[in-house]
Image (tube, rainbow, N blue to C red; front, side, top):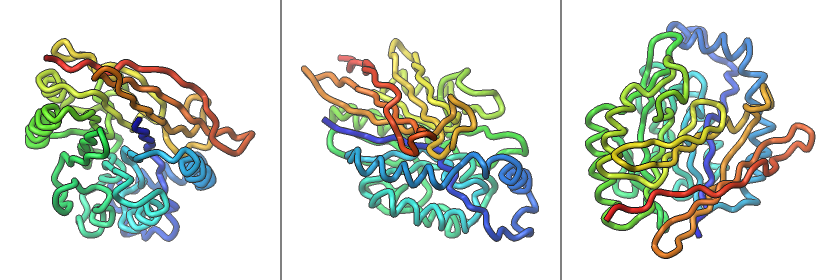
Length: 302
């Protein structure tokens, strides 16, 4: 068995002491949103309960699919780096960036370099190039970056031709090795999963790559609700699972903080998946199991 925990969109930022000069761009809108609403939604107390619950679950690996920050400020990256150290060591935690982490263009050394050990592939130091491959037990974790700066009031993502080309090569390589291929990205890759201004703009080219090479599972965040979809491509039906924000204190019943546990087992050469949804209870002040179900993973084509 391989046990993977999946969380997303913790929005860790305290935004204490933000300098006005840092807000002379799109960040001003994000800051006003934080002050008006989001700071009362994303709770550090929920994140403390999350760390406790993850420690009890003892997953083999943790995947974080973006939006650790709110405005992508250097101080936020430092704050998130400290939280990641509490979540686990880099070899046990894989991170991919979200659109809030790339809110505006910012120097690499002041931002993503601070998370480099959690973003890096198994081979070589992290340079900002994606996708990144990490092999953990039977699983090939393939991290993509759909994060890029976008216009005010937009939160779209894209992968780009170069990243898609490298993804195809990695899927083919890990497929030949018989690994359980799990693709990680921030934006939902299935059309209709989210409103157009928050969509993945090159979802169709991604689907064509997956039609040719296949994958066993796709995990994402961004929507702040748990989603279960299928990406149908080239006769393949690939499960696509999105997880809600890990820190939502209960702004809406469907948006209460969640994380997912995936238990993978292999029987007669095929993988099966047991999904456990853990939801934060305001009454109990802890995470509880809200749902468990089995999901069929696609069989390998001969």
